[in-house]
Image (cartoon, helix red, strand yellow):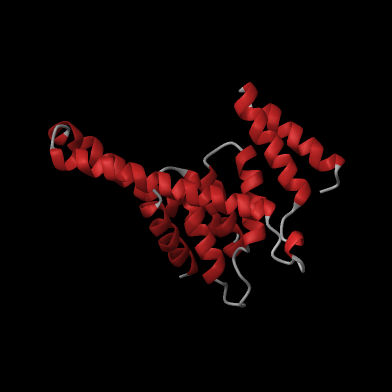
Length: 189
């Protein structure tokens, strides 16, 4: 029963996360806030999502699939990882098959064009929410006592410098990832 429940939760996430793996993050944050195992322990915490997001970005495969696999594995083990990953990708496979069969017939239909035009801002909104969620996990410290303690200053400086360098020099992202990682080791973050 747990595997079916896990599959169903991630099927819903996969069905409504338009825009790719990072678009699953708002749904996974909601899952972290609301879902817990039979022992009352949460499947994921927001801190775990932040850590797993960093790892998932460096692993081969889709970010959403990596996050769902990790959540399922944490919940019920290896079979849970498979159930969650299959639940996440099943809606995409079903929709792609349907769209591929019908696209030729309805390619010039105004309703279909309007539907796809509506998907673009939805995807942008989901990706923006994921980005802001990742930024808040990285730069915001909810345990701060004074107003100036809520911001993680070292991390914010790294973020600002990397943000500037990306737009100024446009080098391969791995250079910036390695530089940020080494800076984190050097600053003992």
